[in-house]
Length: 132
Length: 132
DNA sequence: CTTTACGTTTACGTCAACGTCAAGGAGGAC
DNA sequence: GTCCTCCTTGACGTTGACGTAAACGTAAAG
Image (tube, rainbow over the protein chains, first blue to last red):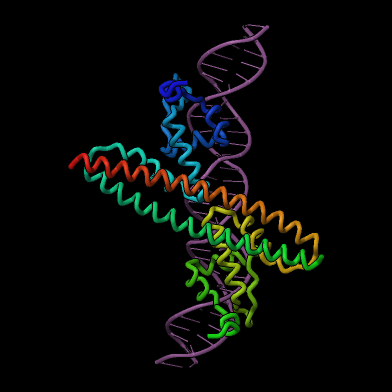
């Protein structure tokens, strides 16, 4: 499977939905919200590797508790990275900095949470040991 | 400020809400949902350090996209860690393991996301360099 | 004693993110 | 042809997590 072959591949709604664990309703909803713009083959939707990549980004954002509006901002940024307009690149770079900062804050948050959970687990084990 | 002094301190709805960046409506809602059980001074709510700790846990869960039901499970677990019933401790320990696994998966997810964001930012900078 | 600034409960409203249902088109199997 | 299955587009329903408004209590300030 060459690179071009992989990138030329397309998906139907069902294929893409099943692969990424969402319903077809979700895909249509995202399209109505302007997050995806699959091509059409007649009336049927046809998703490219690019659409698939966008969708994966969106779903990851959702897992982090982002709203669809925030997800859209992110995926649009990824698309904007190919521009050649100086001003747009600068704006984009600044936004990316914000996003990165936010992500790092989340990492810290997550680290603390995990440490606490591990701590509670340790206390549990101690109690169990005490109980023989 | 001794330890006991700090732990003996109480908060009104407004104080707690303002400090943790939520509305009083949210605190009352959480109470109605059984996530918080502040004492009463007459009819007024009085939150202890313990309530505050629970609330912080809940809010952190929310930031991670957890539902209130999931948050409740977590905070109840923290409370349950002091039990002396063997069976309950074992169940709790197992659940904690699940939670920890999930958290670690999220960490990986975050790491990948951050790497991608950094990558896009780097490509931006390259483009800017090319443009002089 | 009234005003002002809180607090309270109860009830209904809202918004996001879909689910669900109805009514039908397109294309293959038989 | 006629099923059958999958797809389509609306349109309305649902759920979670609050917001908002009404109607009232309370306690300190002037």
